[in-house]
Image (cartoon, rainbow, N blue to C red):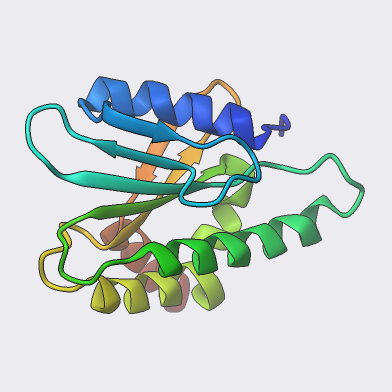
Length: 155
């Protein structure tokens, strides 16, 4: 699979968000800046979208680095949650992280806990935005991960 840096992931997400109408008052942070990587509002209403992004590593230990980055992204997004604010939260990752997103150990349990933490006003809790090498973005919802867990557990 092709390597996607954090900046490439952010650029793909920005294009995706623009198509969805989420580019009012955008705040996109450069690498290593404090705060969420991307914070935007929808142009038609005031829903805030907070996104933490991670990229791939070219290291020979890329798999270990992906695991670490995934856990780090979860921690970062958790520190940005404001319960019952009605915000949307996402973690944007290269598609090479999909095995972690759909894993019982990380993705599913994280989404369960985040759904409760975000509160009743949160439209869908946490979701993942997977970026493919062709820059296509796929939104992975709580329901998709839950269904995948059912399929995995029924095998």
